[in-house]
Length: 411
Image (cartoon, rainbow, N blue to C red; front, side, top):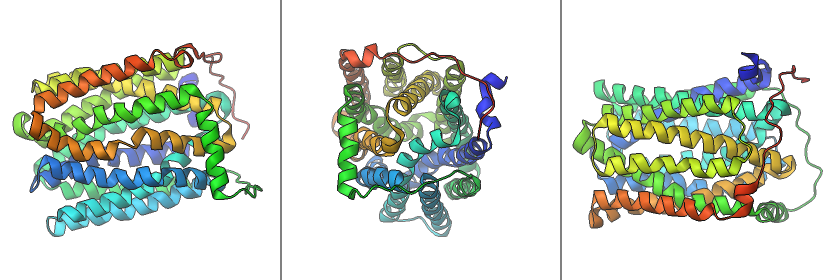
């Protein structure tokens, strides 16, 4: 058993794991809660604008966040980001209790959460190798994916139940409280941080991150691919999915169940990745998101809830396989001192079109129809992945020895 979860024997990683698992449960509740809070008085286009408002500051500030995370203590950056997100989510939850927030209110608080995420995400990629021994890095990433996947089951299902019996405000409020747990866990982590002696300017450090990013063809090709793939998966799923659930599947409980099944699939994917180290990680990671074609088509055809849920279960496996292999490959191939900056370029490139996709998918489905929009997304998804598989550095990269050492950490 130690071979599977040995990373949890290391104090810093255990604290990190507990905090992130807890906050991810709350985050799993938020998309369901906010979607149905907006749809109580709004439309799919309104929901798209709220989603875009949260993503826009995330995209705009990611590169700044990457430099900050390489320049200062990543733990402190993440802790501060979670304090900001705690305040925003608790504030929105209280506002929902007091009165239905106007559209601008949803958008403003979503933007605050996006600001926090812009600094948190690049620091997260760089912090993991600092809180676990190098021999357990793949295992640590698999455990992180697994915990997020378990949270992806509990959070949406719990939100669906809460909304059915009370108010979306409780789910949003719970999300804010779980961010506070993450703040506490990050505060308790003890790692040495040595202030960088570099006298480089902010722009020089940003340029260095770009040079490292652009020098690796496999890296920028997959990021370019996902700048489109993320739009084709998440804009239809999180904007149009709740609308379909409200119109045809019974509302929030059905949508919560569908997302919970996606989380269950992600759990299985995480369990697989605890023991599986493919010899060609990027080839495997690139093929895995093809699994999302099934749920997009099932939603387009307005299949029964369980049929859509099975599709999301399969897609959850694929998404976790991609995420674990992608993160581990970046951490292995990119020097630690520039990792957060390169990660910021990864996040920026992957998300740059998503706010636009969130904002326009509602009007597109009004013009073209729900079925045509969803099936079109599925076809384009397959096309972009197929083109990426033509790049030799993606398909030929090989992983190091897949054995996971189980020695005790020297920390």
